[in-house]
Length: 55
Image 1 (cartoon, one colour):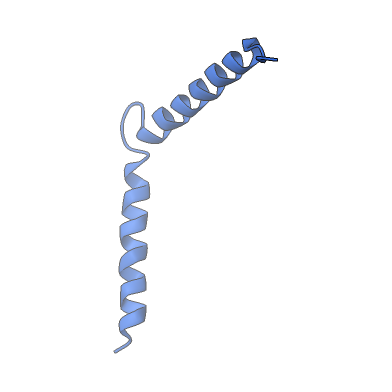
Image 2 (cartoon, one colour):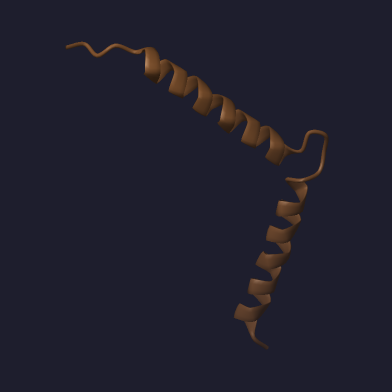
């Protein structure tokens, strides 16, 4: 029996299940993550644009 092939299939099944969980919910965790990254990027860009250099 090919044990390396068996473990590969198991990892694929677990990864697909975990990816499926990211899209369940209202709002889904993936949407919440993307919104958090968008907000952080926007806030960081704003702060960087108003900062003055010390020299």
